[in-house]
Image (cartoon, rainbow, N blue to C red; front, side):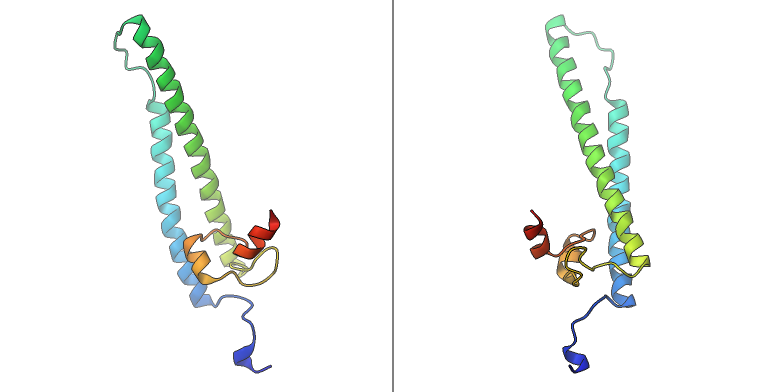
Length: 128
């Protein structure tokens, strides 16, 4: 098979550098968002204002809900950060962009949209 016809098995160092820059940018934003969520969780407390007992119960319920939502968002954000960091490890190992199921190269367009992807779309659909 001529060299031009061979299927590409991994991304070039230049392509990996492009993906690394994208991931580092997303990682920085994700860590900032995570820090904001943690700050919001720590600041979600009663401001000490004295309200009527009926409204106090409603206020406490709303505060609890807000804390739970912030905790869930923070957990989701932390998981995203971990996936981005794992993608950086794969870049260093030069295994980034290789589908963990099929062993084929994940299209660059998918990696630009979901830089922590570990499977092709077809493999992900068939995995379910």
